[in-house]
Image (cartoon, rainbow, N blue to C red; front, side, top):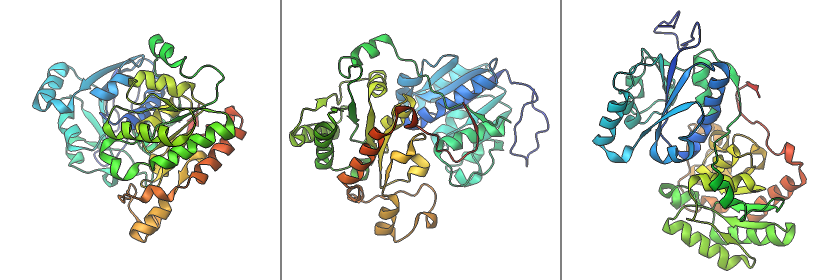
Length: 379
């Protein structure tokens, strides 16, 4: 193999020359997989001859499965044993120079046993759980209190790559662009509101309907913006759409449940700004080059917030920790969430409007600035 100077106690897996084949393993979720794309682009830039295979979830593959220069193999976690057997069938007889196991869930570790690779890189012990260490033989260096994307770039540093290319270039089919253009015409300032987080977090991550409606009203009357609602087809999201439209007192375009992931990405790309809680669409917007006013009270934006333009985030996470746990950010585990139903009510409409006003006063070229905790070479 191409590896030199590997020792059991050494987290480094540096290659003496570019490897022939690497396998990246990250199944979900949409936001985390969007964070993966600059990692892929960095690998392609530094090691252009290395063949990359990404084992990815079925939903996430609908958005990212056509990345140029990447073989994406879909693993359907909902298929049960059949999904594991299908993955083994597809990888039978194949061998990689290294596996980057970038997900700590037990299901991911078990599925990753289908990947034959002499070097299996995983997270450091502090970021491991669910038996993650059983499925790897190298670990990345510790990186306390890192953003999720910085945690992914730790895998490249373990391979000896110190550069960081913050480039996404997610392919958009023409039909997706064609559907988005009449909804958000060129040069029409548009606020996209993606009001809901994942269904499993609905009890505590979503901002109240009436506050979204007040924001929509002010965006139209104060800034002359168009407002577009986006999201999935769940009952909760439909309830939000109906409530916002009924209370806003201004025209609101409702696209909730009416777009696939590619069409959603096309809409986000054409938007002026996106308002969203901690959710996949927030990170899709950054991938599309659109700033996000993130609404954070139940999770720490320094860990899970937009990677670029984090100055626009409304951060009430410290306040929520004090109210719910009586602690400060540096007194709780990294990744601690606040699971209090009314925590998001700590975010006021005026907080969001202040960010919106400031963002619209800022030249577009200055709205997205790197905020990572690493010190990379950025291109």
